[in-house]
Amino acid sequence: MKRLLLAALLLGLPVMAQNTQSTPPEQVQKLVSLKYADPQSVAVLLRVFGLDSIQLDNHLKVISLSGTKARVASAEEAIKQLDVPSAAQKNIELTVYFVVGSDQPGMGGNPVPAEIQPVVTQLKTTFPFKVYALLDVLSLRARSGAGAETSGQLNGSAKLTAFSVRSASVDGDGSNIRLEHLHAGVRNLVSLGDPAKKQYVDTGISTDVVDVKEGQKLVIGRSSLDGPEKALFLVLVAKTIN
Image (cartoon, rainbow, N blue to C red; front, top):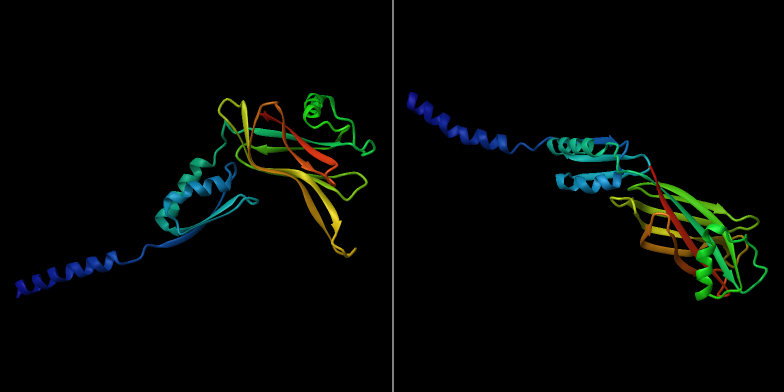
């Protein structure tokens, strides 16, 4: 009788083990707030944890994690290690000068400031327009590893100037600044045939990557403005601020 009972118990053990292994792991969802790190950069690194879902909001600086309890816990621990103040993180100040060249003497604008006058002198050797003038100046400050944008309105017109970068970073010694997905230009409000229907047409320059030295005055491009008789030049100056 004891042998039969022991055999029955032994036969039942694999079944019990199999039922335990087939139990699905607990699924959880967590919303994690960031203080210092860029959510988009952190989300890319979290892919190695094999989570079911990673969603982020750059404006609110939060990341939503979804997956097994163990994997979400590991991802949370990684975020704690990444979301810390970094001594290497710096503020990057960017200034873009909107310079217009034209053969029309009365085109308006302001005199070219002294700090970029040497750049305009070089432009004249390649693009011999009769007149060069300053249309606008825009400045923005971006955190290393993040982006920023700004805009302005030209006096007495429906034109807007715009300047944005998706990401700005500094190399190890701080001598080189890399800007990714930079755009700067003029938005002109135009009619679509019906005076009641208008939209902004963007005239400007976009580039995927720009490398600029600290304090360098760099011409990042040329674009036509209000027709071929005018040209828009963008002069960029970048510097780091601790």
